[in-house]
Length: 358
Figure 1 (cartoon, rainbow, N blue to C red):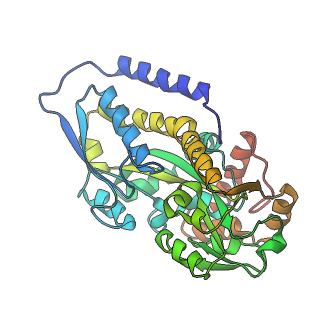
Figure 2: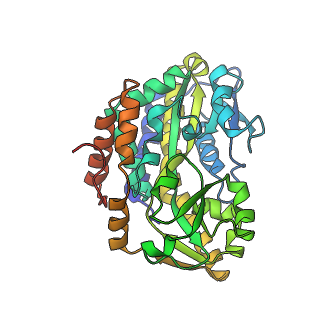
Figure 3: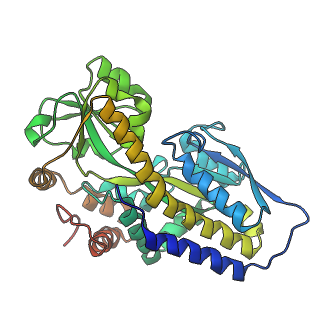
């Protein structure tokens, strides 16, 4: 996991100083209270991406000197995860922390990272690259507007890795294995001979316990919650991908009613929360996670680099499929796929394979 990035912290301080000069120091007659819903547990629960919401709220309250506060409903208290976009779209809540990947029909391009096998996993690089990509393609913001929302924070989460009953040192080790996973594409990322068993997170422990699966694919935060280290003891970094799990949306009607200085505050607080997540929170969580798992007898290893290149070469070009699919809906699919690879490569990532049109 990355070490603390001092340049990002300097940017955070600069943003705060800039806001001091931009926002007049006035006091409202009545404080603004925003109703917030999150699909995640509260921020004080270790490994909960609800932490990103908590950091954002702390920054907003600090910047506005307490003129904006929050009423929170964590842990999907107001409905299942996919319903949170509808909650914030309709104004049932002012803010929602949810996962655009749950509703790809509403956010066709926001699922970008989830179609690339062996994409970047370093959260600092991901954050920087994602910001650059969104500046290049207004379609990201357009999709939000269509849903009557605006995204104010978009923090990446942990890398997707494997835990297994036996070591995974080569592609042959996957043959005959059944892998618990989620998602539309992850099952197609598996090496030849492996079978995908698509189940939600809360079912994975029982599947392993009953021998239905022998391998599980998850971010480390999810492994922490599912406690599968009680059953399987091999953790393999396969560098598959890492996504953006902690997106925070504000209802667009609520947004438009806010004075411009408060809109600026919400956006700047979003960047502060993102920077804190990638430079402090995720590295800290990984340290806790690794220490705990080592104590419980888990063995950590990296999948061989040459094996990853061979693995990537064996797969269908799913990003090209995705590009063709969204192009039919009017998006510049090929351009987005190629630009993501260009941006991340410029930021230091070495792709195991070129995806999409050449």
